[in-house]
Length: 135
Image (cartoon, rainbow, N blue to C red; front, side):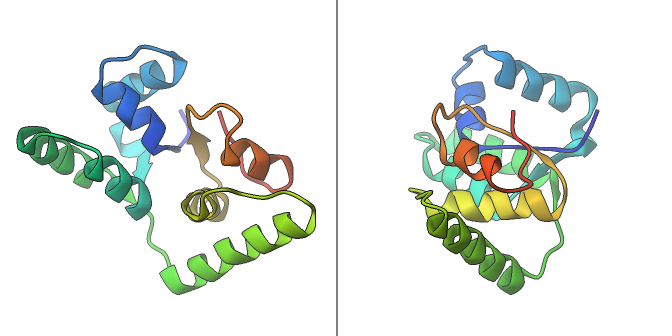
């Protein structure tokens, strides 16, 4: 199995018990390959912000904090994410969520698969004109 980043959309569906190829893949990784799951600060923040109950917050905070995090020069990564957005915009591609450029840039920098559930998403647009690999 290769290293993977699971986007917020996958974590949300997984936490709600939704079964689809992406959540089943996450479940498989959690059971068999937890050391190959990577989390980004943005995904950690987005997911935890959406929880309703303190018990869920504590449970998932602990679980997500146990995952790998990429070591990065966050200033450089942020600038590179802005450049990614800028370059795509020059090609006529408008990314709606700036956070998606940051998540995508982290995946690109680390040559890591990005698993998401967003149909017609920013990630799909980014992957058409960059080295981003998605599922």
